[in-house]
Image: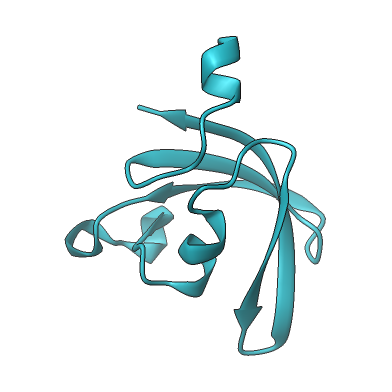
Length: 82
């Protein structure tokens, strides 16, 4: 990954690798247009609370979002584009 990619904020079309504090696990999601959303393939639409938290985030940042069980937080590890 180049230095330019490391500083890129998450946006529609990005994939985001993150560390989930609750599950103590790393995962990757793709931020996609609403018409392309497919949660079983980790493709999330921009209007979801999780996507809203990720949009604009950069590697190294921790973001919070609301879930049915309360607040959750993840640390952004990498942001890239396919």
